[in-house]
Amino acid sequence: MSSSTASSLCGCSTAYYSSPLLAPKFKFKFPAKSQRPSLSTVEFRANPLTISSSLVNHRGKDGSCNSNRRRRGLLLTATLPFLLPLHEFVQDLGAKAESGMSDYLLMKEEVTKVVSKGKAASVLRLAFHDAGTFEMDDNSGGMNGSIVYELERPENAGLNKPLKACSILEKAKGDVNAIRPDMIALGGAVAVSVCGGPNIPVPMGRLDSMEPDPEGKLPQETLDASGLKQCFQRKGFSAQELVALSGAHTLGTKGFGNPIVFDNSYYKILLEKPWQSSAGMSSMIGLPSDRALVEDDECLRWIKMYADNQNMFFEDFKNAYVKLVNSGARWRSL
Image: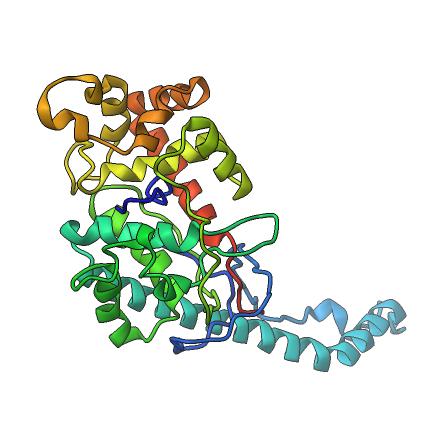
């Protein structure tokens, strides 16, 4: 991860689709528009339309006609032409949802081919740096693919080198021609799962930004715990979510356990405070922002919980990651 803690922001998936109307082919560039997502997964079921014999004309024992049943039969006859088009429309939505899921599965398959354990930390960092620019006050930044215009910034050092995150995802994009922010969000989720972390559902359908996000929005690695919490609060994240997302530093070369295994080693090592030791390389473990978390009572409470319970960490990280990659995104409308 980089020298700027977006690294503190740093980091599948049977993902779901926010829109059942995703086109069969993705376009790599798409002008960004302010559109709100529908993030729920909707399953359309169109049951066959049946007509009960009780709704047609019947005669009583005396041979007289049952007028109530006749009226209902006439009502059904009058409304049937309108019901059938609706029935067909719902079926069409279901078919398009299935087509969208097929596109998603293809994208996931191609991303999984190119994101190995050794490349996972870089791909996850790309997702954090793209999404980490989000600010609630002016609804700017976020997961929009603008990172490709920001690679020369100091905090993004290393992301544009050969065999780094952008190049890795470019290989997958060649086959699926995916929208950039969707590919980045999915890439981070796949990076976590291939290293043994949780499967993370990632909604699809983001619009691409055509310009860089404002500078200076990523959390700095020199912030103390108070500064980190304030920074994350401006992005809509609690102290608990800050601590959960910081656990992504378990991947990579920051010294928190196995660099290619996603687990809760980050929290266990934070509690040991190896940087206080005089033993050589131990002082190089973690960033200043990592070390600051364990000195804050509120953050320390969550660090202890995640150190004791990896399943809790996995669940909280999954939820925080989905929130992160949805923050600031603009979505294709239904």
